[in-house]
Length: 491
Image (cartoon, rainbow, N blue to C red; front, side, top):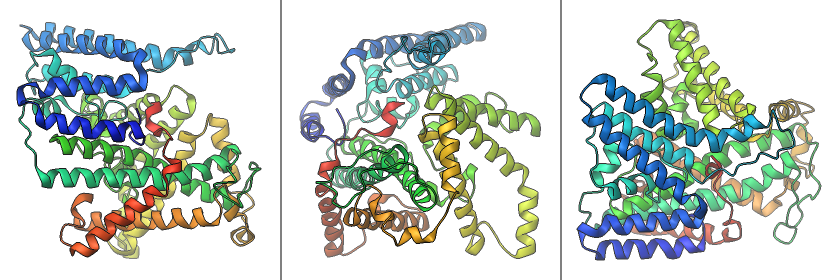
């Protein structure tokens, strides 16, 4: 069941209404049933696997917390981690490993929905029990709800047991202000996914893979793509950077908003990532639940920044290599992760040089022209690296990178090439207008240090409702693009 589908539009109101009607002591059972129903609609064959993972981690957490010695605690932690990671690795990586032995692809395993996300979420419970940051949950049904909570299970955010699990026992009363905030976050998420991603995905598919376009929906669009160089490739590069941002941030906003309506506080997952002044700053803003997971459960246990400079750099490279492999069992994802690790290491190593250059030219990365230059440079680095994320192989990514900076002719901006990149003129203008709205919202949130839902709180009612109406209308006009899956559901 996709967030951007009619079944979910019918499912969610029923969940909310009955949740607040049912007595508090039984609400978690209702949510557990709804979460498993939601998951089964997406991948019914994997529900048993979800149950197995839940039982393993619930048992491991109790054993770890109640163990008498540190040696026994570490043993239980190791067993719990190994069993869960074995399940993840079997379904996610065995096909990749066996492809070296069976190039014909006869060893093909279907990846269970959300397994990367709920596995990592479950592992936090074991680790937090070991650190005694949370007490083990005695009620396995409440723990099962923590693992399977429907807003998060398919694509995150990856929640921590000490945050989400503790909220399951709370009594959530109807709060009209909180519900309004949650619904606006969901509206903003649908705007990002249906209005922006729905159109940008057509453009990027057209340029990168030569996918055809429905001429009835997009009159005037070029039907035969492929072999593009220069300006069209640069436009596709920019388009994909916004596509993946809006796709994943859109999912996160819908998930966080849906949980907020029910009374749950889920961690923020994106904070204006394309306004980052460095790659390390970018990863403090992008997929925050995953980047902080790797920081807390891999980088710091490896020694983090507490050890020598060389060891610190090695730790960074290990974390980003693992992050790349977590995203996908192909070499292009590994290269993608390693590139981000290299950027981080080079960024830290270049701090003295950047400081001297800033002093020499009177530029600061914190404000003014220096900040704008840092943001632009970071955005270019990140956007180029997305090629390895999107491509099917390293070779394909390198070829696309070559064609991006080959035969750049400004005449392509005016000769009809741009308007023929799969969308047509009207939809191209439409999505540019939507991206401008996104950029304005991100800049305003950055400057005010506020959440999306609070942007319109102090505006006159006429302007506030006009903004609601504009977003809703743009979403309605994009309903023909609403059936696409979210990109991160493939991980």
